[in-house]
Image 1: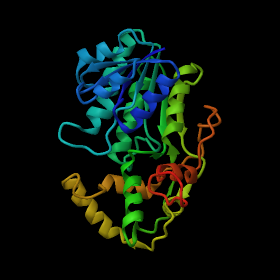
Image 2: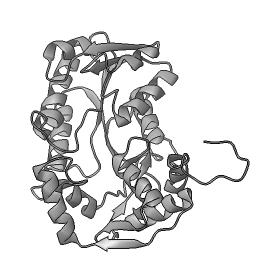
Image 3: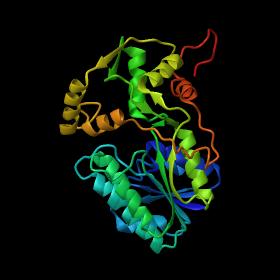
Image 4: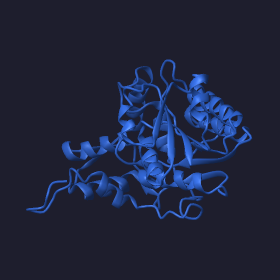
Length: 308
């Protein structure tokens, strides 16, 4: 199958691209900078299309001659010129319209667990819900996937936690650490996207998560076990975290979290409607296994064992 892919150079996109190529698909990838994405040319079945989702000519070129679209582009915080409306709503609207005009048969769209239009939801979640509606109204046969937090190389918060566990004498925890998450391994998510493309019966919206609902403390337990360390934990009072998050709102990058990200963390992200095994036939890896692979380069090794 010839597939149009957005977000190929991103965290999830790299895993999805590799999985599609392994399954024998050809990929046309939309990239803003073809020089920076030149490594993708090393894959024999990848064609690069220069441009962004705001470039109608590039979008039409991307979908031309393809049978399906996989849309992965998203942002976790707004910046000048990159708003939730522009990226999560206008982008998929332009892409879906071009796909429909080109006669593309399927549209697979990445949303997020917790996407909803409620006024109390964060702007991120409301924009994800609006993007879903754009896809549903497009007239295309579609699969909308709502993954939980995705664990894998490139997940910045998990990398930060690993670094703190390795290098810091204590581990700070936001609030009481009892909020629950359901992390899913990147490779499992990539497999879900491949299956969604290849099975036309999988039409609709599906929540995708790992097999365990874990508190933040339980996730840290598994990371510690993988790293062979044990650190004291200090709960950081929420008023202090909110103050730091406000600094992150004013100057992205100044603090490791924004107010919206803090709200989503405290809300948690779990599902009782996990479709990864029941609908996609994939047995997701538990977070303990994921942690051992994620932390493998830093974990202690027996004497004489080869390096990671």
